[in-house]
Amino acid sequence: EIVLTQSPGSLSLSPGERATLSCRANQDIGSAYLAWYQQRPGQAPRLLIYAASTRASGIPDTFSGSGSGTNFTLTITRLEPEDFAVYYCQQYGSSPWTFGRGTKVEVK
Amino acid sequence: QVQLQQWGAGLLKPSETLSLTCAVSGASFNNYYWTVIRQAPGKGLEWIGEITHSGFTNYNPSLESRVTISVDTSKSQFSLKLTSVTAADTAVYFCARGPTLLGPTRWAIDPWGQGTLVTVS
Image (cartoon, rainbow over all chains, first blue to last red; front, top):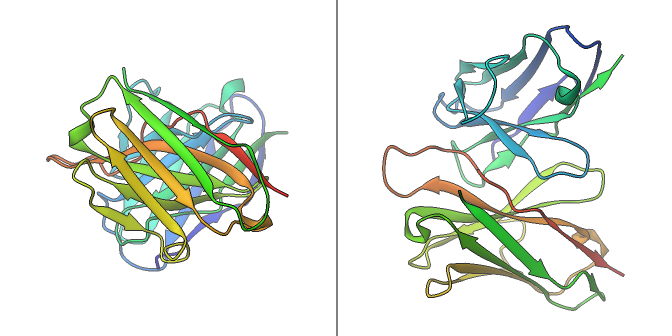
């Protein structure tokens, strides 16, 4: 099973600041098979990024993804109030499909 | 616009069977993997399994002995059954649309249903 390790576990930032979230896999998963999701409190997760760097429909360009192989990054260039949430990475490289434990982006 | 509506019993006793049904509208039911994920209170996301319109299934080995996902293409619905539940199965259960069957495949889960809280007590 592919294990995805997200770091940091939590991030305290102010609105307008830049957030950089990491997701590392214990096996090479290429770049086509890595997705990022945002989950606000009490809501279902929402797809942000797929294929490591492609924004999903309706996702603002303040969100960007990069990486391949085992190292992936989600960057939020300027945090808006609605961006404070938990972010998960997920892989489709090898079944069972797995998620990271999440990074919580909270208001400083 | 794709919508997933889901329903199922919210309170179960240990050893009972969890049942969840997901209805899909606004999308071609035949073109996707249909997926179930769960999230224990305050915890992360766990993929349970997926099914196609033809009945092909893929389960998480950690739950495979207790899970059945079935499909009713006439109603554009899929259903989860999880047997012999314990308190560890207490979670919000999400129905969702998985990757496309036909290329180019977008390997992601989108959209997600609203979630159903199932408590085992």
